[in-house]
Amino acid sequence: MAIVDRIKAICLKPKDEWQVIAGETSTTQDLLKNYALPLAAIGAAAGFIGNSFVGRGTWRTPVAMGLVGAVLGIALSLGLAYILSIIVSELAPKYGAEKNRAQALKVVVYSMTPGWVAGVLGIIPALGILGLVAMCYGIYILYLGLLNVMKSPPDKAATYTVVVVLCGIGLGIVVGLVLSGIVAAGMVATGGLGVVR
Figure (cartoon, rainbow, N blue to C red):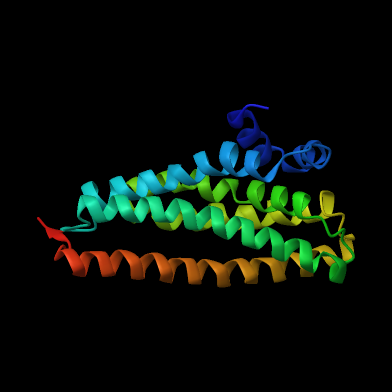
C-alpha cells in the first residue's frame, strides 16, 4: 500500500484500516524505513525550518545546530517507536492481549501517524501546539490498534492504552531531554547560542 493511502486510511478510517493492518506481514526494517522514517522526517524538517528560519520572536536556532537537532530528532523518534513497541508487546499478557513484537510495532508506528503528520505545523513554531491535538487523536488510534491488532479484550483495552500512553510520555520526556541536551551542548561548544534578529 502506498504511504499516502495508508496515512489517509489510518487517520480517516482507523477501525477499518486496523483490520487490514492486522493481517499484513511487515518486517521491522520495512516499517521503520519505508513508513516511520519519512513521517518522522516531516516534523524534523518542519521544525528545522521553523526554528532556524522563521524563529520564535526574534530568536533563531543556528542552521548547523538546527540540522543536528533535526537528524537527532528523527533517530530518537524512530528509537522511541521501537522501544515503545517492545513495551506494548511485553505488557500484552497483563491485559489479555497477544504478546507479539511485530504486531506491537505496527500498532505503535501507525498510531503515531497523526502526530508525525501534524509535525508539518512546526514550520510556524507558534502552531506546534496544535500537534498535541493530533497526538490525542493518535491515542484513540492506539486504542483501536490494541483492540484489533494486539487482540486486547474490550474491557482491558482502555487501561492498556492508558499505561502505554504513560510509558510513551515518559519515553518522550527522556528523548526530549536527550535531544535538548545534545543540541544545547553543541550550541555552547560552538558559541552559537541563537541568532537574534
